Image (cartoon, rainbow, N blue to C red):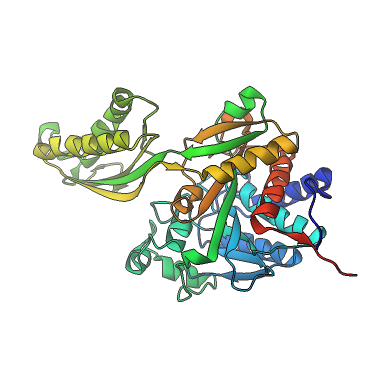
Length: 425
């Protein structure tokens, strides 16, 4: 078995064409054609995407299976028996009316790294596994990062089974509808994972403004998602005087309007967002008796996240004397996470060796990598987003940048799996 040289037999133009084909095909699996990518977990669009991903895994010579969450794994066996795997991938769900690159770019990068192993006749000592994760966005069942949290044991079986979408459909019901088996194991043995690598679009303007194709992520912000429920009293819109109303929507709106001020007062890049709002009974001539809304809190420092949580709860308490009842439930809490320093150094080194300009970055968005950071050695690369846009149909990243990142990840994966060239003579 001979040593593998850096940059071995990678035709970037060929890789780029395949990447474009992957992205273009996956983008057709949307519930909103012409209005961005809407691919909710366990939907028919999910089923089509997973069939495509599994097919490409098999074409690359990988052994494919799914777990009890619906996460997809494609494994290139290593020469060491029962050795831990180097995982590489991302998620393949989307936000409603989102873009084609958030998540799929990382899954496609994993597919391409595996294809390069196969094309170059590389036998890993430690297995290489491409993974495609579900429900990172939390668009269907809330909370987010469900695939990775379930894998590492942060999502209890009872909690998983109790989750419902806005139509009352449970995770188990949704899985079974598209032929998945929720009885399969969900949690993965920590000893079976050697490292995790993820490529993702930046979702911001920094790389494009600096004209740098690669960002090496050093840390990811902490984030919390709260769900606030405001209960009032329904009534007729025309016959109930204004001073006799317990309007759940008005109370919710007054709370939400104060969130930007809370974030500004906290400072240091702290952000607060309400992106989901449900009003009941949702009639034009009915005073709302219940409103449920999300509160997404993010900061690079845990103390700021904690401060905002406290202030949101205090704000909720202050409205309880106005004829409404307010409850605040914490759906997700993840501390700020640092990436593994050794893998950060490895990614920077490979970028330099391959002549790809890079810069260190912190991520303002949450990613599956932040879950794996407490579980195994984790590293992450960013590529530029056009105009810094994401979570919208205009989201776009250059396939040349994805191809450059694939080459870096390929070289890093060679070292992490200690791969060598097969001697078939």
